[in-house]
Amino acid sequence: MTALSVAGLTVGYRTGPVLTDVVTTVDEGAWLGVIGPNGAGKSTFLKAVAGLVAHQGVVRVEGRALLSMTNRQRARAIGYSPQIPQIPPGISVTDYVLLGRAPYLPALGREGRRDLAVVGDVLIRLDLVALADRELRTLSGGERQRAVLARVLAQQPRLLLLDEPTTGLDVGHAQALLELVDRLRVEDGVTVVSTLHDLTLAGQYSTRLLLLNHGRVVADGTSRDVLTESLLASHYDAKVAVVTAPDGSRAVVPVRGREADLQAARHSEPTTRTPEF
Image (cartoon, rainbow, N blue to C red; front, side, top):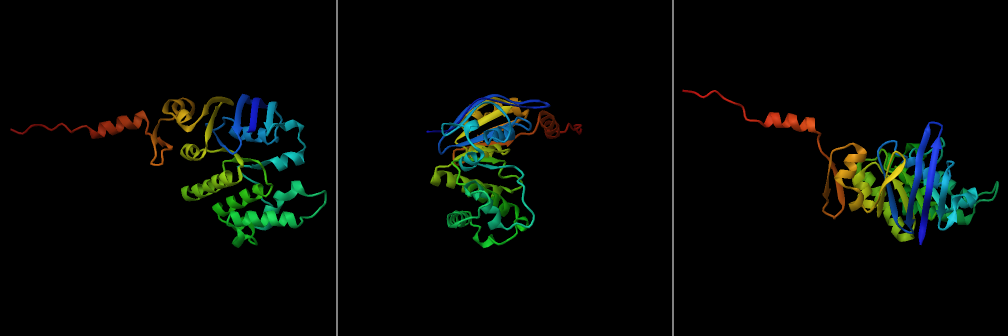
C-alpha cells in the first residue's frame, strides 16, 4: 500500500519558488530519506506534506487528499517533528508528551485513561520513565530528542515526518535515536520521512533516498543509486569518495580538494641534494 504520494508539489514564498513539481511516493512501512544541500527545500517539503505551508499539487496520505482532511484528521494521521521544536518553559516530560494526545481530546476536554495509557506506553518504549517528572529543558540533547519523538508518537500517526532528528547529537546518540526510529518503523509499520544532513546515516537507515537541489528532484532511488560520487559532486559541489561499509551500506567520505592535494604532493617530493665529491 502507498502511504504517501506527492505529485506536482510546488511551494513558493515572496522570495521565489522553493519547491517545483516534486513527485515521489513512499510505500507503507518504508523510510524515505530526503537529502540535498542547504537551501534545497528539504524542510519545506516536510512542512508541505504536513499541511503547514500553502502549496500547489496533490499530496495524498494513505490515499486521502491532504487538503480534504481536517486539522484533527491530519494530526491523527501525520506526526511532524520540526528541526527546532518549541518547548514550553517549565513543562515536564510527561506533560510534554501528553500534548501529542491533543488530536483525540474534545474541545476543552482533559486526558482520559486511554490517553494516559498511550503516553505511559510511549515513555516505556523510549526509555523515558525515569525522566517522566523532569523538566524538559533540563535534559541532555539525546534525552530531549527522545522526548520530542515521544510527543509525536503519542499522536499514534501512520506517517512520521522528522526534520533533522539528529541535530546537535554526537554520533553515538544519533545512532541510538535512528535505531529507535527504525525499530518503531519495523514493529509498528509506521512510515518515516526524514531529512538528514549526514549522508552516511541517511544511506544506512533509509530504504530509499530523495535528492533535492534548487527545489527540484534530481535523484530518487536506493542509496546505491543516489549516493554516487558524480551525483554528490555535482549537487553538493563537494569532493567525496563513496565506499562500502562492513554492513554493506554506502558511506560518504569527504576527500581533500585539489589545492590540498597539490600541497601534499609538493611536500612529498624528494629534496634535491648537491652531490659531494
